[in-house]
Amino acid sequence: MQDARFFQSTRGKIVTVLRRRHAASAVDLAEEFGLSTNAVRQQLLTLERDGYVAERAVRRGPTKPTLEYSLTPAAETLFPQRYDLMLNALLREVKDALGPQALATVMDGMGKRAVAKYKERITAPDMRGRAVELATVLRENGVEADVIDIGGAIELREHNCPYAKTVGEHPEVCSIIHTVLREAVSSEMTQVESIATGGDACRFEIKAS
Image (cartoon, rainbow, N blue to C red; front, side, top):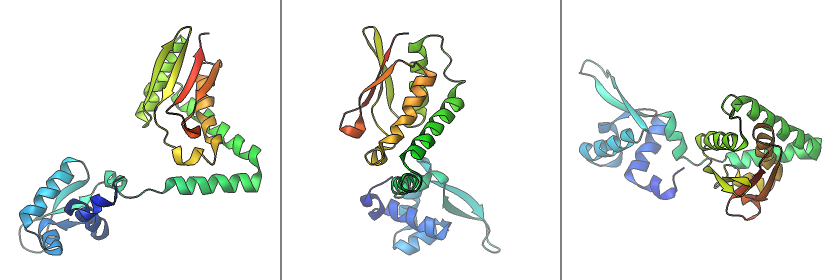
């Protein structure tokens, strides 16, 4: 997600207009912003290179086809996302309406579904190998994770949390990774640091089995 300064730039304004108009040519955009067509094309080339816009030829009457630009699905990530507010509100409703145990049951189910989803990816015969495979899965899902050897044990470390704005109010969300670790890597697991409580990382100590 971009900050407000991006949307004040020409490139950001182009993205905003394309979201509203769905498609426009460089000439259309130049007229809207009072810029030269070449200046707009330069911004469109950058947005296309970054994967945020795509072009296609369309006919606007008897003349030769015109190149129109539209946003790709990836461009939606440029706009403010408030999923954390929705998730917090949803979890709050579950807890208030059905009780804390119901929320714990939901989190446990999500953890088990995650295990089932990735079980074919976490198959190493040894505990360290499974932890490394899990770290790879986590990185593919936007979590910067690694595995560190610490004497007779290892640590799996998550250096960022995709639910950082949720776990402060609903620490139950952390139980998902606990379930995954215990069922896919080792039952001998202890969390020794948490981003949710002010730590620099989420660190999970796993004893050699």
